[in-house]
Length: 386
Image (cartoon, rainbow, N blue to C red; front, side, top):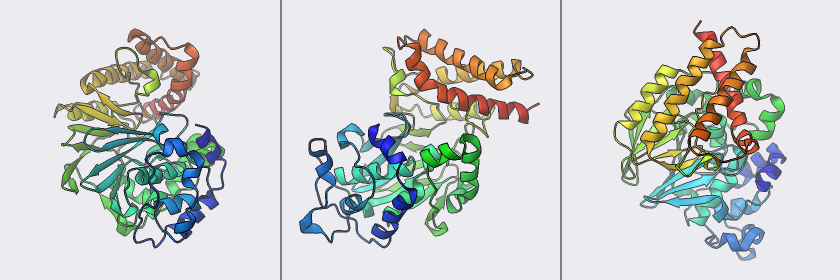
């Protein structure tokens, strides 16, 4: 958390500068220092090795960065079965947003990237695992909202062999992020947008693969299948991994912060941020994800979550309650404030009914940002559906 707060204050131009000078043109990105004991080595971990001043690997890139040192790797990497790693991107607070790394037969793919500020952690993870930057074949985006895709362009500059895999509706925003950045400024304000996301780095069109429903890509002989899953956004894909029998769900299955878990397990709240929320489409997408009887869902917010059927029931129950409240409050004098109050009550009641003993202040810390965004999303939906 402290690393993230310090990083947000750094110069974006400096962050881009190290990428351009240290990564562009790198053909092989070999690890120059084993980072397996990084939790014990702390800041010294990323100091340049004087014996290997000319190295061009991930470690050399990290050592050259004008950014604060990431925390101990054990603090932000979780390993799961089937070569899947959950990486805390450092966005907002600890265990709030994740990138997933899939590794099979020496080849890797990131699923979602976090923001520009997350890139050092993703590169440090490769070094920790003894992977080269050239071992990454794909950067896969579930959708292009910036907590999922804001660091994609910067990360791609570090990965010489990677292709960016993205929904066709989102591809143009990765090639030219101008409109996407303008939309983020409109939602969050220019100061927050600059602080939390920085300036987006475009991706060359010839490095982008656009998805289609049912498309399969091969990662080291491992099949990853894409499903077009609108509801949260029109440009949203989920990715089925047969080996783990799990879906990488982005925001389609909502948000399950570990801090909100109770003795009954993970607890989910909806994600209905503006501007493309569609409750009917979301119902259909969730039901589609349940069809192959997944063992796990890998959620950007946050991590590997078991019992997808229970999560889906809880999610859709709250979606239906939100839609009913929105319709009831359509003509309220202070509609946005009324929506926020109604949604806050829905989420808190759901959490309390499922065993949450967290203080009101702790619940507010974790849910109030989503209350605000979800109210904005339902407001837009109401305006589109008079």
